[in-house]
Image (cartoon, rainbow over all chains, first blue to last red; front, top):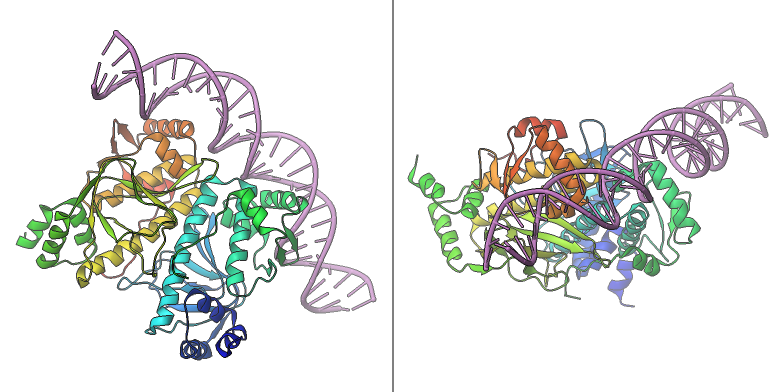
Length: 237
Length: 237
DNA sequence: CGGCACATTGAACCGACTCAACCTTCGTGG
DNA sequence: CCACGAAGGTTGAGTCGGTTCAATGTGCCG
């Protein structure tokens, strides 16, 4: 194992994810480490970005989970996507950007300003952005054409894939920052129905969920069962 | 009315939309006009971009409707978004991009290569991209938290807003390239149910749909009824 | 006039929701 | 160390929005 690879392995999940998206030189890695020196800790249930308000500079999630969310006038809540360590938020290219969705922390989150102007790192951002979009499309498929059981399985598979990139899911087992109600609000279901379908998945041996830890004993089989295809956004690599 | 404004008014819907998204100088407009000289006509039901394949260079839709679509292994179809004149397709920033969704023409479409390297025009592209993302989020809300009637109304309102930008909807009345089955496949419903809910909207006087022409007698009232908020992606302007 | 695509209708069915109760876990303070 | 409360998970029974399937209607184009 090379020295560079070792330093990646020893580094934070966020850096790990970005390094997996684009080839980063030791210099790039240390720029990321420096940026994380300016990290800020944010309590759970705080707004990082507020819908309709100006977007603050781009930030990198260093630790913890957040979610893009929209609340309807009558109180209905819809999670649009989940944001995990290594994900970017507030990266916009239009002038004077206004946020089109609120971003709220789900547990205690650490964020830092996303370093700009470094070509290799910007390359990783572009990959990240492409993956984000692919995941949004995945969310549309889930809500539009999958039934409740498939929705739950598909989302857990997505989270597992994404957390694996950051080294936060090992052997298809990861800490989840969601409860059944949040899952319901992401999947267009009620928490009661999520509960029942989760039991079905558990009894089938497809999902093990104890406390805040989820394990997917056979992701490949589960993926086949719900018709999930792995996301690829580039032919490079 | 200035000479520039006149020339915009006289120009194609696609240019009209881009000019509405960013301030374009006469030079920029003529670059767009030139690009449209290399237009290509594509028959209905043809793939402009194929999922999993490399993305061809970015293109501008000059005329006609297209849609991003995904087909599940078992044949279920989900339209992810609709693409109208002035919309961009295939604009990617990662290296060697692979398409994450198929783009298919819905009727006869005219496309041209999107001119690159012109700052003002690229500015319009960025605005367009931001709107695209906002519309994807809108689609998630529709599928996740709106009922059938609200979904239909919300989508028609979105189409009306977008077509108005391009000058293709006048007095809230526009030509629609969709039938009830396509609407169903976009909204996660069956065509039978779309038919029934459309009748409800018609009887309530909220939608007039005759042949391929749709009119929304009172968009503001309808928007209030389904809780739709207008999209804003920039504080500029 | 025939045929095709699309729209419309009816009746039975079912997946997911609603509402309300109850249970479990866990942290906290007496 | 136990009592308590809060948050989240579980269960049951009834209801409903949307689906399914199959038939019928309608407009258009060659």
